[in-house]
Length: 468
Image (cartoon, rainbow, N blue to C red; front, side, top):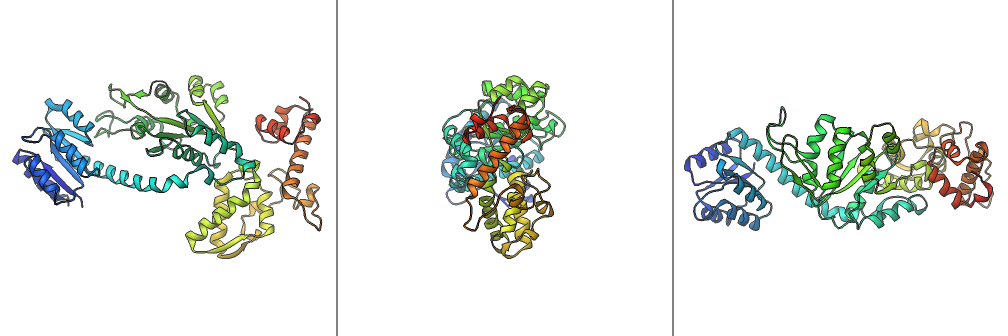
């Protein structure tokens, strides 16, 4: 039940709205003019106000300003005649949520009130979440070592203070949305909204309306004018996930937003101007999509201003223990369990797995293990069978322990970091030997991007031992 104030100098409208809203279960207060409304405001807490625009003493625009000054959470809806729509727009600038023209249908009032109250609840929830998110999405809270995610940390730090468009590249499950949130919440826009849209999850015929909004009657089912995600992100950021799945038609409209910061809602010829930072992400090879005609070249270069590549988990296996510990704490708390770590055989299995689903798959593996094992250390037998298959980095099928890849652990122990580095160097040299020194082909054999391979060659100082 919500507390609603009806302000209108026409008694018939007041009475009709009062009766209708009470039938819907709301608590209703009525006022014949602005002064009476302000008097009610002194003693009552309100959720929403229906305000006539043209009234004696205090007009609707001034009343809305005072309502918002008293309580910014009050949602105001303007009631206006056809001849005063310009003033209604002015009232919206003063803080009104929407307006209805007289005469109106009571069902339209009910729908608009429902939307407005939902909007109010979302804004309040958004404010609560923002108070928690500033710390949660600091980039240093992204789980990973400097060796694995160091370049990503550096890029987040460098681009966060700018308004440049960012394109996050990486396989599914690598944490691209977490990177986008870190960028936004470390930016000057941190106090405004970050709006997230998964372009692959919304049907193509609905995505345009979702992004840019629509006007009433724009298509079947469009019973109310509805703002889009770009409107909601005004002065903030919008994260367009899986942008490689966007249709060519929508790519044209998005290109205009990037170039001119303006667009038209579906069914409208009125241009909306927006101030939005765009952060996009994809698991696709957009250059290949451009060559195949599936993605516009001009849009690609507009998005590719600052690319950030998030490496797959198989390229940063040193992060596996850190991530596993993080997820164990998370699911221990959620299930009131007391799992305290990984046994050596479980860790070996996880370090020898390719993680095709990346961090998301690791999270699911740990959740399953914590649920099945209430306390103690997670054992290899508790892990899914696919992790217990003999393999090295997801490729070798004949290896079961470190000994099978030429590594022996002496009695005094071994440097894990150096052993991994040596093994990595052996793999790179073997791939280069197999391809006659061709780095493109070697990268393909190792399932790496060429730039990643070149970086590893430089880091391992293997240049003198390679050609091509």
